[in-house]
Image (cartoon, rainbow, N blue to C red; front, top):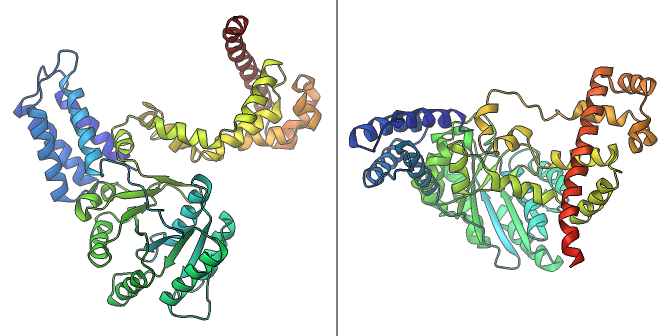
Length: 440
């Protein structure tokens, strides 16, 4: 997402390159290009015009410092305004009650049911909540079963009444069940339609009145562009929801919904779905998204993802093994699994400042580790523990067993050896620095 917009904005800023100062003429030319870039990204016309007018007003009031080029100053102003356009501050959800009740709303196909499972998983893991999922879609065939499958994947129970057609009563009974069994979070999945209709709106409004949720989230498919914004407005007029969830941001979307929706409905984007896996859900941070749009990466989110997979005890164990030169292919495989848990490889790489643009046309397969894993899995336990015994005949056997060739096996062994030496050197330096302190 945003690849095309990022490229267009970068071209716009080049108009100011070589200019000694910001003037009304060069700002007007730059912002004309910025406005076109926003419109091409499917941003609402009024939002795009208001945005560029604000940027122009702020840019013309700035004195350019000797150390700062006009184009750099313009990037800073546009960055700050993009962040404000998307909400400015990160918005959290209200989990103040016991049980806290979250009501999902949105059209059919927007990803409500999948998001319900993702949210349950996230709040269970990160906030130590005990969630209960509630199946209130009484119309769509297999809707209850779908939620149960998702609940099984994230290890969260699902409350349902297959014989009932009263979603209000189902939701009320689910809250009673949560109170009786000690669940402190109730996530209510509701029915959607292919288009907005009166029956759907009356039903979701009745559920709201019947359960008085702490939080109402509107789930919308980001790939629908400005239709997403229009739908959000209609739902907000009826429900006065608390926040927006944008799903499918990993798809072929121009990003206009993410940039427009806050201005149109005046409600914050709270979460974004970034893939099909149940862990592909992020809290929405406006400033970080502005960084990514302008090609600055998102190193904070990258570090947070790494920390989620970080195990202090395992890290200490690994450090000792490296110091003793005992790092083997079992440890190597464990590190690969941790990286894979962090998410989509191309998305992770794009979070590194300066890398996003370089890899935008590269096809980085999530199965990039598949060949390496196949080679390691073709080794015997003894070979994984003692890589130095891997002679020519063993390497040939591993190549045949893994469906690779001897060159790939040799390349992996060389890379492993270099990695081991580098890790030992880094660990050794750290230990060396610590020794003088310990002697004092």
